[in-house]
Image 1 (cartoon, helix red, strand yellow):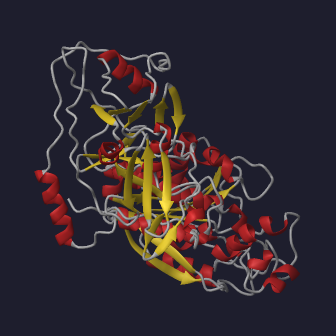
Image 2 (cartoon, one colour; image 1 turned 45 degrees about the vertical axis):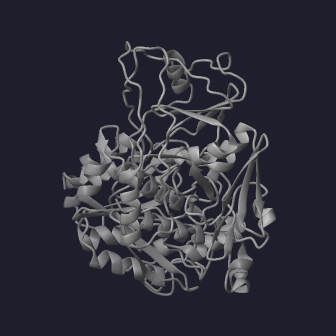
Image 3 (tube, one colour; image 1 turned 60 degrees about the horizontal axis):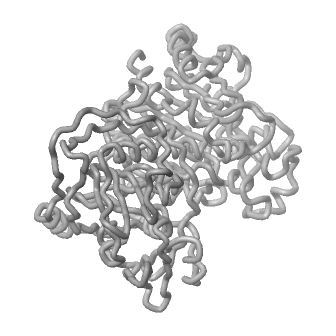
Length: 561
């Protein structure tokens, strides 16, 4: 199987290797040292990995033989020949063997206290769990061990430090050095064994431990590290699995963590990097990455498809700059759905694989990047800062900026019943000099006009409401769509807004869609109303959880159109 992993590059380049490695392992690519993005908890609102039954022995000791295939993978392998060579190596490697005799079924307690049963200097990890037990204490290290080609990979620095080892980087030789009780394991940062995900270095576990004199034992998804050969019994194995919230695994490639980090300020540059990485990781379902146009400050407006299906649903976000956390959600949704697809997961009765095999989501994650730059980086970051500063502003200053860098509110600029609003360019409300005067508007109108789709969804913030109809379009749509919209609102817990809120005036994007495409179009206002801008990234879960299934729900709704 050709490997599709690519390193997710951290966004900050350091010229000083010693400072880069002070807090976490960096890595070398194209003679540049990259610093890892800060690890942040990614609450598993999207993950529902099914458990797997285990085969047990009649004896109380349950352990795999102490061999682990030394199959390493190459993050930067680009040729079919290299991929085939690695696959041949994997096929010829020694595979793990289990001692296997049946045991009675045992259901562990939900959260056992393992502190009393854990020997000193004893580390326990579980595949696909971010938790680690170090000397009886459970800690969340965020980065999950994973399996690829029958080899277990672990986050190097965090695992080593839980063990009590020290980790150093030698700049002159670009060498990572791990020291433990007089033993040293060294590896070049460019070595093929070093796999990088979002700035975190992963290595084959047994490879490192063999050099450090640490015993590794395997219990069907549970991994122990110790200075001696202490063996767990059946009861202990299940207690530790419960304590580490182990949910099972299959012997195939799993992401150690998702790529998109939605709980920090999510910049235009980071979004583009994440799109690039996700396209490399999931080329079958994240495809046709392209620009639909260029902003007035020269930024491309990226778009791409998620899915394989012939039926299309359009999703866009962040038309209004201060509502930029909508981009965080849409990109996190893409990342999570792709991960769920390759692992054939289901959630709340929906199958990710069935949905993405039958539908393609055309994603425009950031419609107004120029405005978002002002919100995130201030007025001086604009290409014409004096012009921006001279415009009328709301009370929130740069962080409440709603318009483009030209002072035009894009959702008043579409070529449907357009009329002049506002006295001139401003932080919000101005409809522009003429209909579709702005390059961002032109780009979205061209996409709408030239794409066949069943549903169009524009993501905004705040209020947890859904706008779905206007009196300017074909009113037969109201009767056709009303019950479907009610069902969507009931499932996500949002308020269904009245159908006549824009009578007599427009310039709005979703009104344009309904009028010219005669299809379902909605504005989804994410997150509770707080009256401040932008919505804090630290509260991302209040956005994500209610609408975690929105793509699946819309695809299901499209079946009734």
